[in-house]
Each structure stands twice: as structure tokens, then as C-alpha cells.
Image (cartoon, rainbow, N blue to C red; front, side, top):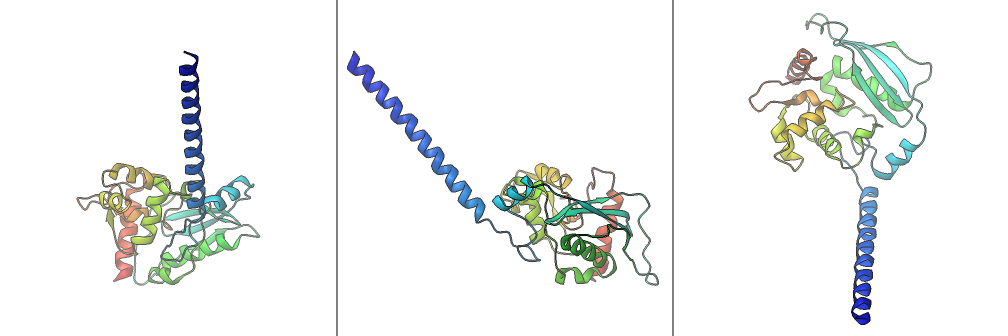
Length: 240
């Protein structure tokens, strides 16, 4: 009886030891994979801050600054720190501007701190070009991002990365197709959720994601549907 109990105790100890070893090995592999993750965007690999680098930067205290722009969509507020852009907010305080060949669209700085980071200035310059000379944005420097939603390989981050990388200016993609591109064909609704979580609209073009029936679909939780249509028209005309 004592021998049987000893054997059981030994086997249990071996099983626990194997589980711990498997966990440690899996965790180490995840850490190595995290460190070598690189995302290529149309603007190089700079846009997304990945893995342990992002984690360390999040742990440090960010000093955010905000620049306010007067754009054809109304006031746009761009916030960021020296590591990258955190958020872009479209305030929808006025109706979108009417297009006219006699009066080119413009985007000007309305309010800005005395000192801003290079990444924030890069973002502002990109947005100004997007409205006034949209066909040039593909060749312009692109700012880095510094927001938790854009970290690592979570579904939201992966979908937004693929959208930025693969859906070009003037193009559209359906929620279903984007889910397929992200490796989960049944996740069309989750793609919609990822679009709602996009912290940097315009830079990451969630307005280019439309319904399978060709309808533009919701934007900014339905409050900005008219802005989505404006942006799609702006890009189709700018591409022509």
C-alpha cells in the first residue's frame, strides 16, 4: 500500500513538473515572438510601436500635447507625446465643407502648444496634405502611433494594421473581406468593433470599410455617417 502511494505521489510530481516546464517554454516563445514582431505599412515599419518596446513606453509617464486644426470636416484635435500620436478626434462642430474647384480645400492649425514633438508635427502635416493635396499622402512621412489599442497582435490591432497596410487611398473593403484578410472569415462583426475602437481615424482609414451590399455603413457609431460619405467622395475625386 505504501509503495502504491509513493508511486502515485511520484507520478503527480512528474505531471506538475511537466506542466510548469511547458508553461515556461510557451511563455518564453511568446516573449521572443513579441520582440521580433515587425509591421510593414505603406509608410514603412514605423507606424505601429510593437511588443516590449510599446510596453516599456506605456509604463513610462507620457506628456501629451494637443494641436487643434480647422479642417473641411470642422475642428480636428490631434493628441500625442514624443513617442507618437495617441488620438485623433473629429469634433463635428460644423457641417462638412462644400467642394468647389474655385476654392481648394484647406486644413490649418488653429491652436498649438509652443513646443510639440516631431511625431505630432508629422501627423499635422500629413492631415493638411490629405485635405489639400490627397494624392500626395502616399509619399509623405507617416507618424508613429502610441496608443494601447495598436499594440501587439490582439485582433483589433491586427485588423487596423492590415487596413492601413493593404487598403489604399481611394479603395474600399467590406467588413467581411477585412475579416478574411485578418484570418477570421466569421469575424465581420468583430471588425466593426475594431473600427469603432480606432483611436486615429483618417490616419488609419476606417472610413474605407463598408458593408457587403455596397452601402457606406456606420461611422463614429452612426453619428458621423455623413462624414464617411464625404471622405469616400473626397478620395474618389482625389484619385481621379
